Amino acid sequence: MDVYKTSPNFMWGVATAANQVEGAWNEDGKGMSIADCLRYRPQIDSSDYQAVNQMDSAEIKNALNDESTKGWAKRHGVDFYHHYREDIKQLAETGINTYRFSISWARIFPNGDDKCPNQAGLDFYLSLVKELAKYQITPVVTLSHYEMPLNLVLNYDAWYDRRVADLFGRYARTVIDYLHDYVKYWIPINEIDSIIRHPFSSAGLVADRFADLDFKTVVYQAMHHQFVAAAEVVEYCHRHYPQMKVGSMITRTMVYPYNSDPNNVLAATQTMREVYAFSDIQVRGEYPEFLLAKLKKAHITIEFQEGDQEELRENTADFVAFSYYSSICTASNVEGLRVTKANRTVGVYNQYLPESEWGWQIDPVGLRLSLIDLFDRYQKPLFIVENGLGAVDELSSDLRVHDTYRISYLRQHIRQMLIAIANDGVDLMGYCMWGTTDMISASSNQMSKRYGLIYVDLDDNGDGSYNRYLKDSYFWYQELLSYKNQIP
Ligand code: BGP
Image (tube, rainbow, N blue to C red; front, side):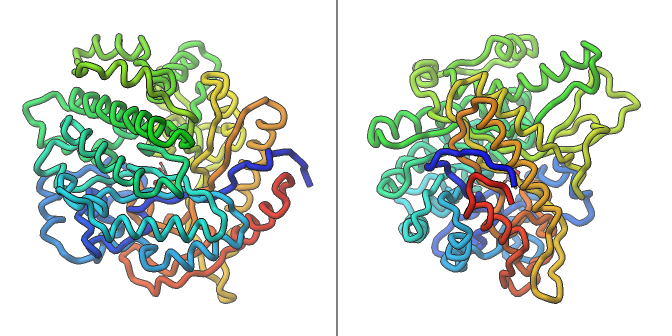
């Protein structure tokens, strides 16, 4: 058994997102959100995330007119809304001390622009954090994880519209005030770089609604509004609740050069800089020069309102959170090279690494490299808020899932994480594995891509009993958490 040291207050936990677990899409006053428009589409290759998650106005209209949950995977989630007490109790028994979840904006402000918040929505999240408190589990709350009220897409211009950033601010302040006794850690926007890769599912941007504008300009303007809105959350928390900590969050897919050809090394460096631009703005408080130069060259102008620059500069993140699942290679000329996919990113296949059933390459050392790189760059506490393996799991006749492959994935990644803390001097606050129970996959909207420690009896069409069954990985995580610094 390997022995490593984490600090006694290291945050060991699990992570999830409202739109992937809650279900109850139209209950207790919740409004329709963009996630409720994302349908599981078996006719499309589920790893083609762009095709799966691209929506046009006609498809949204179609979703609006369909009141069923059949096939609309995210509308029923895994019914966490009605199972949260039993799920939290079960997860508490693993020994976790941290639980990352997100709030559905449309549960709080059903249309985004309502005069008053929906009390039932606020109360649901209050009960949730009280439930966590019962087990001394610290919540980490994401305010925007791939959803927003659909009304802000249809009657505003989603995140492109500055008024939406203001409405987000009101929503954020409402939730922060309501939960402040229970929540210290906040992440304003999940994987803030996602807006570039999937602008509809992360920010509600529907290309055909901006027919008169250059869509790239729309995306970058919306990105700017997300940065300002996130900085306002930092400002509000620090001013009113000085104990609170607010994080930046990016998707940290490791990127290698395909080989040592300097042109490929340059391609990898440039790809990484594109992602780092997002954390740079939130951690350093200003747009990096290379991004400004790139936008200028592409004739993309971002409109700054008076005070935006100061807002960003004065309200930087307290910690740097990231998700890590896999890595890709990059080459300056990809012709003839085998293509691979990672977390909604396409790259060149790495011959040294195995791959998951979804073709995401499994790279535990890439996690250690990411930790070193991020810490050297920012010298701020880091937080791994997502890491896990999506796989097809089978419930066996003993009503268990024997997911040795997931245990192996987690063991290798956690080992590299612990080495990074022990040997590389990285300051890491915590680790949350993705996820809790199984849940609907974000990129493919399907159930059969499972990540949980707890199996949920449900299929891609939404048929099943919703019964929960423990997986071998549940017991492995429990064993790990009982040793904390040793890896079973
Ligand atoms: C992250 C998202 C999550 C999540 C995870 C796994 O990017 O923040 O919401 O689901 O990726 O991705 P997927 O579900 O597409 O396999």
